[in-house]
Image 1 (cartoon, rainbow, N blue to C red):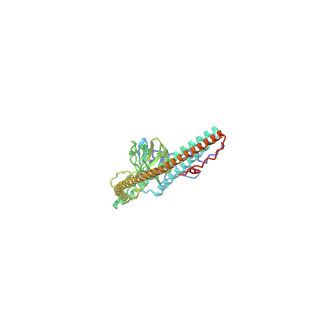
Image 2 (cartoon, rainbow, N blue to C red; image 1 turned 120 degrees about the horizontal axis):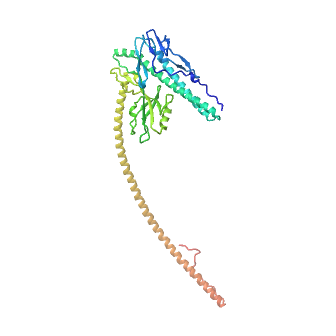
Image 3 (cartoon, one colour; image 1 turned 90 degrees about the vertical axis):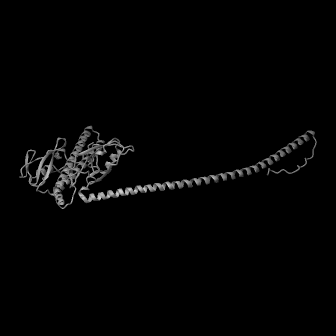
Length: 425
């Protein structure tokens, strides 16, 4: 009843969510206004870190604001209206250069946020297990409130991790624009990852065979869609693309799930599956078009990877054509072999039938022959038994007559032939 809860940070230790509205950039002096307070930014990225869990994870509270408020000599800040009435920050590359360590730090912080979310989810699960053995209602109520708090904190960690990941992608794309310019001057095209689009939600339904017809895989970025075969069900799979990262299944976040857990959820789902993905697009260096991302990580490999993908596609088509011809040959061979086996089987059955008929005829002849002999022996035995009975009756009559006359009669003469002790054929 008085089970101890795992040591976790209090709710107030969690840093507030990064505000959606961007800070305002001022003069090239490098100063910035954050919630009415003026702060000088001396580094390209100022991070205010706090410890949020027992593992000592570093959670940045104002990383996006600090990056956005770098002096205008290095960046130009502008607020652009985004979807749902919120504002988003668009960064423009200028003369300055962003260190790669800042982007790496944002990636590491995003990973730490996800780790903290996993710890909170596990702690909430342990507390739920303890609630089952508690006797006091007050203790259970307090434990339930703690579980809800931990889950809420886990969701906040996931949101902050996603925002940091998006910010790192934006800064990385900006950082690579200079390299792209140099490679263009050398007449080499490179696909540069662009800002990821918003979440895309679709509803999938099982087909006549009871399958959702979706393939999932996993890489360093998480679980993503690896295949979308055609389906007979009328669903919204047309909104999805191969390479989209899965962020939620039936409103349950999968950022800290592994591939097996995601597949298990899809298998157990009986109702239509609501899948929410985060789509990453890539920009062509020549035309500026935005083709769908075919595979995670392919864009960063450049045009050589695209040529390799085209070559692989051509090989697959050739193998598919050769496999179809091979299947036709196998089908013809199967028909010929099946016909030959059928004819041989028919011959075996006919020969067996003839053999059975011959054997049956022989058995009938043998039974008739033995039957005649048995009948003859039975008739002979019957005659001998009748003769023996008559002889016994005659002797009985004579004995009775002698007894009635009172005289002594000589013994009867022996029978004309001796009787066997038992009938013999």
